[in-house]
Image 1: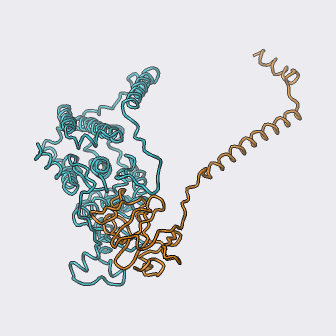
Image 2: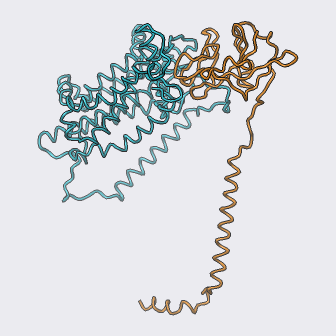
Image 3: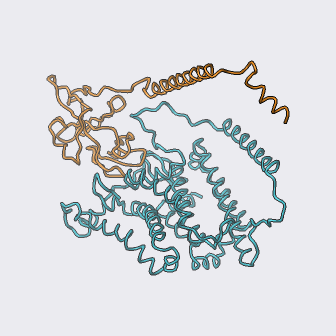
Length: 371
Length: 177
């Protein structure tokens, strides 16, 4: 048991767990026909059946309750702050499964020339708002009220002493919905992580209906008809947002160090984290030279890499792998889509470089631009 | 239909009818009351913007004689009251600000690891204030520290010295020991 816990602690380190999750993701949520074939060959599409759903939930919920036998795990998840976060995560899993089940159901119906489940014959009688819908809403409201009353009685409100500017709690955590942002702030300049990225996320979500204008698959759940967009959206949602909330809520302990789920939150855990800029890495460590005085010369390698990332890779993909996609989208839509995707990709790339080689900034021009 | 028509005819002659002059004066009274109410509410809101209690700790304080600090010591005795760490380095005593240069949390001094570690995003600084871990973009700021006639160190938080601007060699940024 101890050995198993130790292994889980090691595997849940972000450099391992994120990499595994990111690779496995594209087999579970295939973005292309090639991945879809693998998805079927590995039988991963069975996850979205009732049996698969029961197995998935039994594994996750069973594993969770088995883990609460461990005092360190229990201490973290049973904190009044964290109980609703755990509930929300179970909710996220359930609704993800439910939506995918409906989508896969419809995919099968459409493949055998049936109408989707959501299709209603215009000649059929319609369901009334009163009393049918209002009745359901009343029951939902009463249940929510009961749950809130039970919650407020059972769990103590996590109140603390009055705010003190010279004392930050250790660890100091944002509310759960900002934990993804707080985690981003660890890797990026505050201006980028706190302002530019949230704005890009909001504008990206607003731009979605203008980028994905294909009419097929609208009005009902479906996966395979718009797999690229659903897959990319879920990557952003599950790995770049929900994963970061899990990490921020349950795996960031004192001094904002990483702790495995069964690890004790030791204030004196020592982790070597001395970070290094990309310029120093290349000039000093690889080329054995002192850093050049001219800032542009010093940062040239990072600037070139950044230029390749944003200006060379998108057109290159457009004439090779995404050729059909590019011709369907046209210049403007493709450019906007690619800019948003590549900007979103900087987050996992930068996180991974920090976890593995402690890279501080790829381009560091103090006071102007740090990435 | 006939009822409606009769009412219309009766309207202007009924006792409840309001004259033009009376209507205008009521209108003025009504709007004046509304404006006064709105003005009062606005005044209350403006008052709300000014804090009832102003937390403004003293900006200068006497930090004792240099001999009170052991070589290599990072003193946290002024942290809670003034937000200052007095650090005795090899050849000088400096007054470090306790505000993390990333987003303004208050780091903790970890004596066993010899570093200031921020609990918000994991930035760390060495005893001299140089950042080396996490996202902090620049070293902690140092504040003006001078000796008065009695040999007592005076820290002035209104003046700060930044390493990245080359201000740490300023004679007012340290007391030589």
